[in-house]
Image (cartoon, rainbow over all chains, first blue to last red):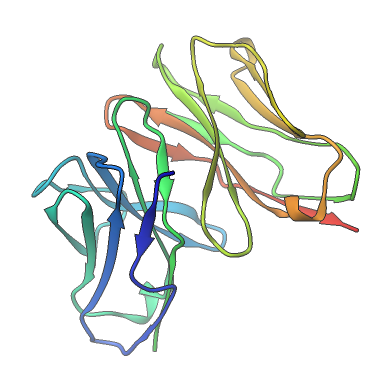
Length: 112
Length: 114
């Protein structure tokens, strides 16, 4: 079974803090994705990566950056957290062969 | 532009009823994949099914069945004899073969009452 894990299920941070959300997959997938999910707005793609050291902007990259130093790990970074970044963050991994994405359990981030 | 429409925002049924979740898509690609995902209250999106655009055979898996019709650009999902555990938000998605990204619909919240 594909396993995608995220470092925290729940996280509470203060405005201005630097926040790291970690995602690890165990299926040797080339592609990894970060989404945020908000009520009424659905799933929105923040960043994605096709390979190590590669990153591509998604639909809403502002205020975020990413890091992919190893194939299995894809980190989302909030350089200076703001209250409007309070959201559910979902990580996914997948292959380009079938475009199937497998999701982690999600991190509910609250920025106070 | 590619688009996925799930017109039903919320559906409520009583246990044992059959329910169909609608999904209509738009794409100019000749090759693509369609997906259904389930998101229970815990929050994780669970992959249910992938369908290749060249395969219009309907698929059945237990109480779940999927009806793919290219002529109407639809990929509907039916749950037979619904159960309380089926309560979740269900997302339909379309692949963008050029970028490996998925285009998601806005989801349909299904509530199954005992």
